[in-house]
Length: 202
Image 1 (cartoon, one colour):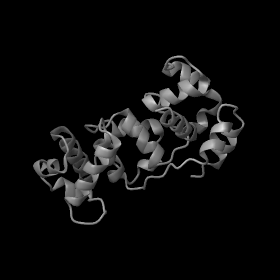
Image 2 (tube, one colour; image 1 turned 120 degrees about the horizontal axis):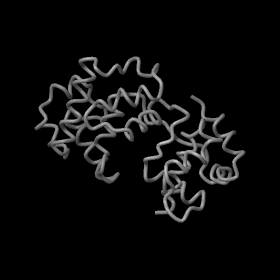
Image 3 (cartoon, helix red, strand yellow; image 1 turned 60 degrees about the horizontal axis):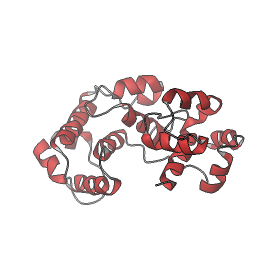
């Protein structure tokens, strides 16, 4: 998917034009392996980026040297106790094990998931333990590259929106959706800029 139509649209918005000039074009690709993307999101939940990356690397190394992420079949056959040695909590290890089982038994239809609507994908994925709406949104943005995802429940998005639109406190989801109407179809690219603004304010 090309993000250029989104950028051309956002350039017409006085709020986003200076952000595009400052931050350049969005980088929204993290690979296309569906299992890896979802497992990575579970690993990163409620953990700092640096700690999460360390756990992620140890997890991959459990299955041999190199940087190749293990297949769902390999993870499913690995005891939860061994998965925990990578630094995962018991809960996260069970979530990833459950995810691997669902990929291998076909209850997650990952080969055809790109044919589903955003809403259908969110509903499909949130049936899995440990995957909520936020994780589904990240999957839609970074793995499927859907152009119109606006994760209004994300604190970074809320903070970036607050700064860009000059609110004194975090805006409500309803307010954000109302003000985003004219760029809502390009919300994925807009979200990337809102994240950059929030990161810059830390």
